[in-house]
Length: 456
Picture: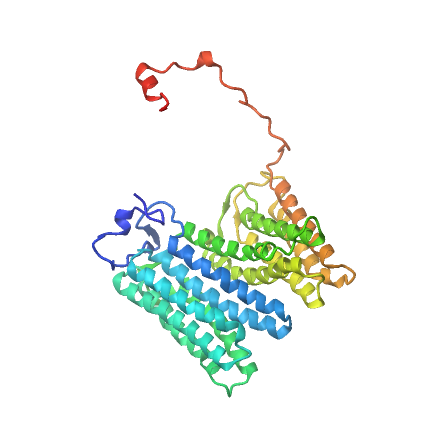
């Protein structure tokens, strides 16, 4: 019997008589050697996926707030409220990656943080309009981070494998939260609050990198250090990316704005679907190598780069995708919508280029039709053209989406063809399409005949 994470249930639940089980590290480094408590790949647990469902609504609410009134100030607010929600999700991801014991306490932690996120998701879009909303959002975020920090401290008592770095991370995280205190005071100007929030977001990213970096390990002189379950980590990042792509698809159906029959709105809905499909294709395709090393497996720098590139990637595609899907209900684009659509999708494509570069190709020269730089060259070209597309003022909404769709499709086709093996053919010769010769089939024994008799 196996648990939801692909771990033997008898080992995951060491004693089913207890509601609260001892947290046990699933993997760690011991004197630089990776040790895993359980072999085999882990997948996201059911309650992790349940957490993702809440983010579908949170991300949609943030994007909708931005699109309602597009301006530079609203864009800054969008980034500053999206980043903290990403930090909470990332902290839970790391916690479940290292200590997934799926007991009552861990499930209650997920529920508690989700309840706090409901407060955050409702108030964060209103932080520039009401001081009460500002205080509620900041308080909810700080409560979520402190809750996760307390979980880290508790787990560091139960297991020594991650103890030094867990306590370092929890302590520095609480210190970073002090930067957000000015946001509670009405006397602080909105510019001051923006500056404090921006410093807080950047500082938290820097602290996370430092706490799990080789420098921290060397400073702490640890024998046992943190390690991640790479398949689980990849699976969780991919799941969040799919949530963002869902923003492309939700509004092209809800409200039946593309009805009735064949019309331009239906065409824009289909083009939005194709764009999302291409973005999913390119993320899955990565750098197109036959033999490649994932950034999480390559080295510490590519691993951190892989994690860090996801925030701008998600922010860009979420904004651009919401405008693209919303175009189904609109007659025409305003200038701000044109720039947000093309800027979001174009910058997202450039982030996907950086994402692919982080993968290390192990193919020998000449294995594929084109080298890695040439295979990926269409990503930045497509991104730059898309970003600059709003300069063509004569293009309407349908034409803009048609051009973006064509560019993305061409990029997918280019990478699919250039990633073929050298000397590859378009079609594979079909074989073994006929039924096997009955005379060469071995006759079943009498016992087998009885066992294979169909039940009426």
